[in-house]
Amino acid sequence: MRMRPRTAVTTAITTLCGVFALALPAQAASADPGGGITVFAHRGASAYAPENTLSSVQRAADLHISWVENDVQRTRDGALVVIHDTTLARTTDVKKRYPKRAPWSVSSFTLAEIKQLDAGGWFAPRFRGERIPTLQEYLGLLDRTGQGLLLELKQPELYPGIERQTLDALGRAGWLDRPHLARRLVVQSFSAPALRTTHRLRPAVRTGFLGNPPVTQLKQYAVFSDEINAEQHGVTSAYAKAVHALRGPHRLRLRLNTWTVDSAPAATRLIELGVDGIITNRPDVVENALHSGR
Ligand code: G3P
Ligand code: CA
Image 1: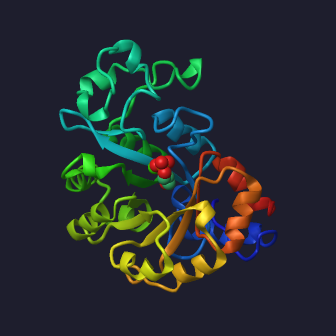
Image 2: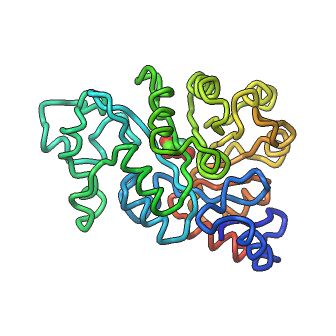
């Protein structure tokens, strides 16, 4: 179970977890506007498996983490793939396979070429042979694990139309039905225009703005964002209160998540400041902190 009241860092965990477990499917305890703390496995459980791969999702599921975060981009021939960097250099063996194609941009390779790349060996030998997943493959695994998805449109300015394309892909995969929209999907981006577009195209989809807008501008973001997903060092108690004072496009209290938080003391501190969710490479560490109050 992944939820807990933020004010009781050291107490009442067991009882409340039992209550929420009855209220939510075990696999979907989550970024529900009801008021618990949500733990998001950042790029999957990326401290333990290569980021943004199916192994990192599975690892998060094995750790009983209900939500994963990912990054979506587009290949030269128009396929949506899950990868963080806009080049393939850091997380694949592309330099070895295609030495003459620097800077190895995701957008300059076809899906067939990308599927030949090893996206796991750089992380650890036992992950050799891991592939960059398509969004469709990624959603397929989430369908099996039951996890929710915090889907980031990564540098959407590089990929015109990716908002609509991503929504179409989500719709085809069954992710725009009521249960997914209510419990298992948030689209986030550092790009306010991309989020505005997403909200305009599919107002029912929850959205999250990545960044730390000044308090004076939060109201403008609340027009199209249900969440502010802020870098941790910009989070204060006053900032959390300012976020929570607003309502998002779905008329629910604006939520505040923060990234990337990998230590128990940091997670505890941020929860006490008032965040609603923690985005972490080490979701087990954060979970343990939630349950032990450390
Ligand atoms: O979800 C927050 C985080 O993913 C934002 O930064 O660079 O890891 O995509 P980045
Ligand atoms: Ca991301």
